[in-house]
Length: 341
Image (cartoon, rainbow, N blue to C red):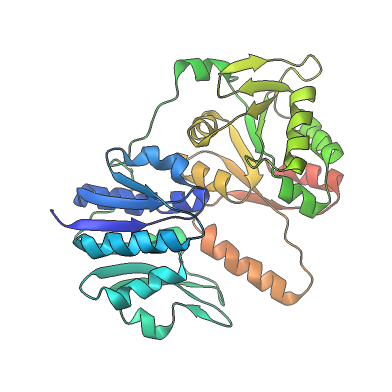
């Protein structure tokens, strides 16, 4: 097929993995393709070898919007897939009426995106509900956007999936659990360094080797944690690919300077992945690796339970991963996690 298509996917890294089956299926069918990614997910652009990749901001700037508009204006795109819910994108079908637009749209309690009027200009769309339980997950609905004559590539054979280097693999233990430290997740639970140390100490009773990553942002609070990790735990530096053991914690490794590609490798080599529902779980699902999801939402009223059930149906419905709901009691939380993994 000589048709030129465009994919708008400038969202978060975990969200990108929900779209990989769809994108791989489209790559099989269409050779002339361009994909827009964001600063949050472009680190995984290695999947799309030899494809045109444009990087824009997660929150589109005026320049980003103009560039995308001009791109569509001067290129003869036959189909455009809106795979991230930016309001600007839903205006484009109204303007470019000769192009077939495919999109995921949203129905909520108070408002829907886009309006029913703008939906009339979409060639095909599927609805994510924010006001009731979804029968299909976001991942499954994206696959349903495919036309009937396109074969669903569940094996992702059109993607370039890199292999871990021998040098990096030799740095990693044979069997380990990989834990995702998220500063904001800990802060919302009222946890700090003491709680982190306690949780890691409990995990070490079940797993001989523990690896953990940290936030890539570089604010002062996260920097404080990362400095503590380097001082008190063993370190694998993924940029220069070296290993330094801490005599007090020789089997617990902080993954320093981790990037998207190295995270992909480390998740794939692990025995179990453990972290807040999101990036770890979506990559683990793609890799068919064991993963346990952590949640920390607050239940103050009945509506909060309904909201979380709806959110779960949107993102996790088809994953079949175990999960734990945590509160500020670190000892209770640790017991719950250990029991479930």
